[in-house]
Length: 488
Image 1 (cartoon, rainbow, N blue to C red):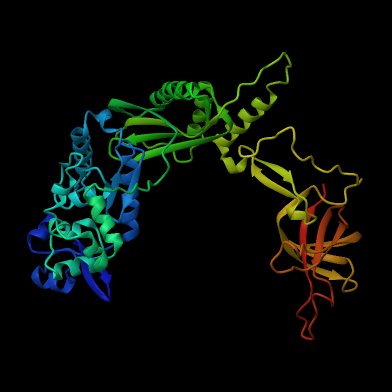
Image 2: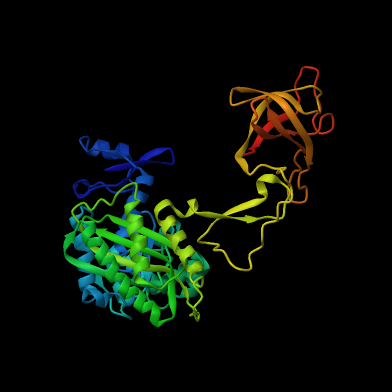
């Protein structure tokens, strides 16, 4: 039995069959249940764990249809339109699904109907029900109104009016119901009877192309998984080629026989139209996994999907040996991204700004591959360079001793090391971009510093002395100094 706190009282939110036979029902106060059955075990409700488990079951249900939606905290909606014939028929699909979940230790109630509301309501009346198209009014008529999943206040209002079943509610005029309970309730009734429908909102969009392979006996080794992915890649590439498409994102889903699902995704900078490229990317991805695939008792289904596909334009190739350089660079970037991660393979784009840390924007190279018309980097005319080639990821605070408050430092401490200044150049004053910032920042005075050991640094004072930062008699309010870069 599971209990949770509701309105400052502990109530039962779920119970097993044994507790139900003893008269325990969800919603009963826990004190009442303990008085009836002192020996019952009580577990605290953990909504987060329930949500994680429901999402895991939804992942497993992807083997039946790519359109799986969450239905409250304890239900799933599957749009099996066009999928039932892959399992024989609707009855075989329903039996396969419920039997597999039952073997995993779940209590399952499932039904098939023409609308989501009708299917949801029928699961409250029993499991295994399949309603023929147009037969929804007769199927839902004997069900209690609460099976529709409407607000509890509507259920109480209908019960006070003597309307306890859906059939009794359907016997009333829609205008009467709308006037008392709102148009939303009438819309639910229309969906329950199949007169209207509302599409479900799947957890993730359906992939553009999908191929999969079932195994009569579960497989568990990479020697079987990689050749299977290669065979599926041939089918997938052939299907996309007929439509003039290429894949930009590929996802391999491996369904374990115990219900767990393992997914591996790779992204590409250019549309993939070759099978060997797919094989190479997934081989790199599998080799680079920090947490190797745990096959458990083996995988009984492997699926390869093109989550994102784009149109491919064929280009005429000449005899120029450099014609394939762009493709070779893109393939190298895809391979490195598969092994290291897409966010670790980046290119830097120049930005129109004078703020040092904003002068370059790092973007994944797969999302922004080099193009002939890219904005070039400004040429460096200073020699030796006035700014360092290497900037720290974040400016680091330092302690500075200066001859005059607004002059260059004579000595500074950075990372617990004291540096005595031999030479200093500056300041180079950089003001904040007030037109971009919601609140204007402080003006920076940058100095090029060389210490007695010959190391060269780029540091700045944050704030103009006695203008933006005013010292106080107690010694507070002094400008702060930061290390921003190192010269080679």
